[in-house]
Length: 218
Image 1 (cartoon, rainbow, N blue to C red):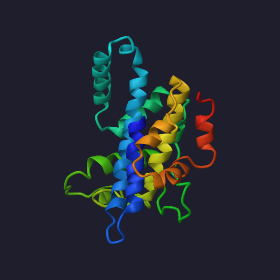
Image 2 (image 1 turned 180 degrees about the horizontal axis):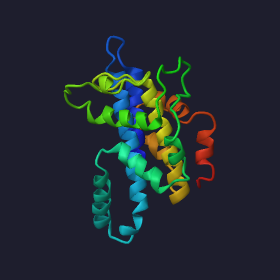
Image 3 (image 1 turned 90 degrees about the vertical axis):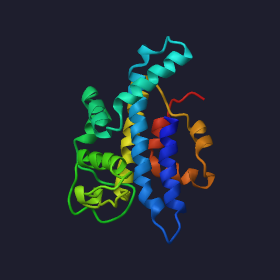
């Protein structure tokens, strides 16, 4: 799970530090956020199949974990939907059934309401379609409200969606497998200390950070 937050934070910090004459950091933020979601999905599947490697030696366990992670490939939409179907009472399942509304930014609502499933497909394409030239750009393929993307996929709505998706995955992993993110370890991996506090405050809105880490053993 630590690796997923390295991706989340890299996108956030690049957007914060981007040169005023270039929007490359802002454009790349959804790309890194999609990788954050992907790695949390993989963390869930690895925890789900822990019985298949927990009694193996270190090398065998690593190989088995690698096999589990590779099975998902980069199919974020399919992975999240499978998690939702397999856990019908979870926040993931409920999360996918409603329209998406950003809650961290004060701005005009999208002209066209989009479901979270729509946004999930946009997030997947922000990763898959941004690494090489495409005849149909991502923003042309997904003209959904404020979720317009360049060839890389810039959209603050998409970033917020990836944070919300990450929170839902974190709570599910905690509830089902009693695994909680090691925040101190994550902080040690975040390469720009200047933005750490602001990043955590944005990622966990309201009381969600307190609720998530409640009961964590020191």
